[in-house]
Image 1 (cartoon, rainbow, N blue to C red):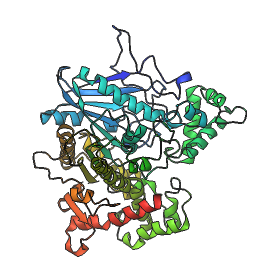
Image 2: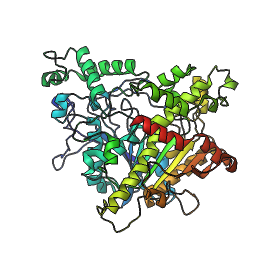
Image 3: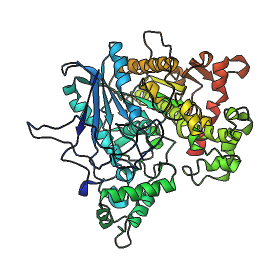
Image 4: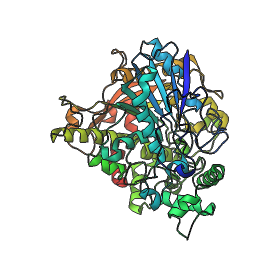
Length: 565
C-alpha cells in the first residue's frame, strides 16, 4: 500500500568541524543517484530498549539528518497531495523518525480510504549534547540549537521540494508530540517571528511553547562544560573557549557515551532536560513566553492542541507520599522556587481532591494519593497549562496585531485563526503497563500516538481490540480532516467547537472565561465536546463536565502562570 524513502544529507554530514554547526542544504550534481530506499540512522543517543512498545535503538550515527517520506502506492508526482510532517518527541534526548510509534501506514491508508490522500514526512534532528550544547563561543559562532536548526532546514526543504513527490507546499500540516509540539511553538517565535513559517498549520500533542521550560542557557552551558571536563577537552581552564569547542570534536562514540551517561545520571531515566533549546540571540532570541507576549510571533496559524488525561503519570515516583515528595517530583525542572510559591502550588492541588483515586487497589500496589496529586501537578505544569497559556495568548496577540493595523496574514478577514483543544482519555497500553507493574500510570504520556497515527498493531501485548481500532480511526479522521480542510470537524458528524469564543478573545483578559474541549475516550458519557466556564456550578453539570471541572483548569492556569512568570 505504501512507498517509503529516505532523503539523506549525504556529503554535508554534521561531523568533524561541522559537529555543532547549522545544517547545510544538499545540492547534488545533476545526474547524481542517491540511495534513499533504506532507513537512515538515528541521531546519537543511548542505545537499547526504551519501553516495551517502542523501537530498540541500535543504529546511531552523526550522519543522521534524513527524512522519512511515505505516500500511497500509485500516487504520482503530478498530484497536489496534502502534506503531514511529524516532529517526534523524546525530551530532546532520544527518538527518531524511524521510531515504530510513528509508523504512518495507518494514517495514510485512512486518508486514502476517505479520498484525501496525503504525503507523510518524518524529520530526524540532532539530540542531546549534539543538538543543544551551548557556550559563549558557540553563541558567538551561531552553533547553538542545532536540533531546532535541523528541524527548520527540514521544513524548508519540504516546502521547496515536496512537489517532486506530488505534495502541495501550500498545504503542509506539522504534527509534534511532547517536545516536538513545543518545538513547533518555538519555530513560531524563532527569529522574532520575522521569517514566517514554511508550514501553514499544526497539531500540538502534549506540549506547547511558553511556561514549561526555562530557556536560559546557563543550565545547559553548565552541562556542556561538565561533559567537556569529563572528555578532558577544557583548554586553559576555560570551558567555553574556542579551543574547548574544537577539542569537543572527539570521536562521536566517545562523546555519545559520556553525554548519555551524564544526562541519564542527572536526569533519570532517559536524560531528558539535560540539553534542550536555549536563548541564543539568533534562532531563539528571547524567552518564548516573552516573545509571545511581545507579539514577536508568526500569527494567523490554525492549531489543534492537546494533552493526555494522565500525561504526568511517569514524571512522579510511585513512592511519592508526602508534600515534600510532591514538590521534589518536578524539582529537577523547576528550581529555586520560593516557599510562598511552593505553598501556592500545594494549595492549588489539595490532597483531598486525590484520595478517591484507587487505580492501584486491585493490583495491591501501595500507592499514596500524594502520587496522583504529583502526577496531576506535573501534567498541568509541563503540558496542560502551557497548552492553554500558549493558545490563548497566541489568539490575543493575533487580535491585537489586527487591531493595530499590522495584519500578520495580509488577509481582509477580521476573524482570529481557529484553535481547537482536546483531551485524550484512552490508552492501548493498559496490558503493557500491567506487565510492567505500573498500571497506576493510566492514560499516560504517549497514549494518544497510536490513535493519531491510526496504528493497527501496537506491539508488546497492547490492546488492539476492535473498539480501540475504531477510536483510532475516529481520531485519525479528525487529523486528516484538519490537514485537508483546516478544521477537525468532518462533514458535521464530528462536533468539535473552537476552543475560545471570539468575543472572549477581544476582552484582552489574561485568561478566558470559558473553554471548549473535545474529549476522546472509550466511555460514552466521558466522550464528546464540553464547554467549561468560570460561572458554572458543579451541581448543574453532566458527568463529562464534572470530570473536567474537577481539573480546575481556570484556577490552576491562573495560579501556575503567576508562579512561573
